[in-house]
Amino acid sequence: MNTMKALIKREYLEGWNYYVRLPAILLALTIFFVVLTVMGVGNVQFGDMDIRNIESFGEALTLAQAKESDQLPAAITLGYWAMSALAWGALPFVVFFSLLGTLYEERRDRSILFFKSLPVTDWQEVLAKLVTIVIIVPIGFFAIIMTAHILTAMLLSGVALVQGGPVSVLWPLGTMIGGWVAFGAYYILAILWALPLLAWVLAVSAYANRAPFLFAVLPPIVVMVAEEVFFDSNYFLEWVGLHMGGWQGLVFEVVHGNVDIDGPADILRYLTTGEMFQGFLRSFVQVEFLFGLLVAAGFIYASVRLRQRSL
Image 1: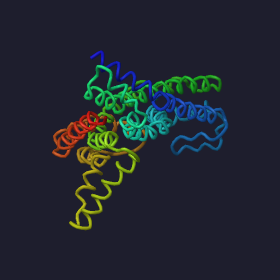
Image 2: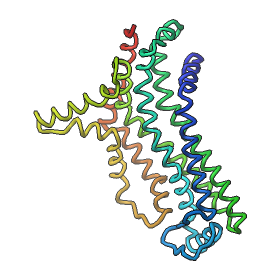
Image 3: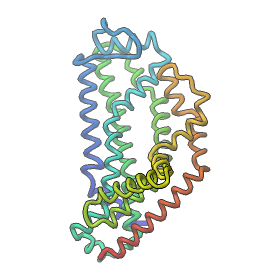
Image 4: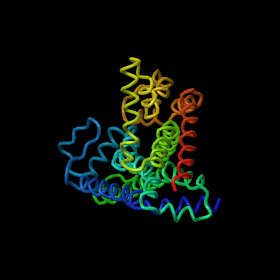
């Protein structure tokens, strides 16, 4: 266990610029422009409210509290998540390219010779890399984003206080915590669905001698085209699409009949209610989901075997 912790720590520190500094910089820039906007440089808008005569952020909050008090906590929470879009948008690219390079780079720069001399098995090395990139890195992103939410609330509270607006509305802790929990559950399910694709990228990283990106992308495309040409079907394309995000249709099947969106509060309620979590649980009994886990296990095993033979 101590060995695995040390390996994960090493992997995380090696990617510090992408795993910590990148989301921190993106969120810092976003917070800067948000604060700049609410201080008067730009426009402030909330729902369908007429904002032409609003002179400050504090006044906008006061008006929103008076006219849309039931929607305001959810709107504020969704606003915090919206300002995190840049960081969340960067995460898939960080995960993909980190997996693509993690086993390839150590062979290219010959650092694998040093790692092979350590009392660490190939299984430990490969699993440490996978766990770091797929689990630890997103947790780090998530922690930075939650910190950004709190920091944004603090800065906006300062602006509202100076401008005479209500500060308490900027701290909807119940909906904020509910959003964090719901998103954490969503990410766990999304990563499990995507695991066969991620494991494929890891296996390519262990196999490719050059141009790993082409090795990762071209073979699936060739298979898709060949299936379409020779069999006039798209099963493989549909399978890839399912694991890239199409699985969400399974969730929507459960809840679509109970959804009546009429404002931010309904959106947040839809994302955090029991119906949505029932949809999550439904995914775990899908044959496609279980088969995907088996495929992922096969690619992870292949990655280990390829690393063992890499010298």
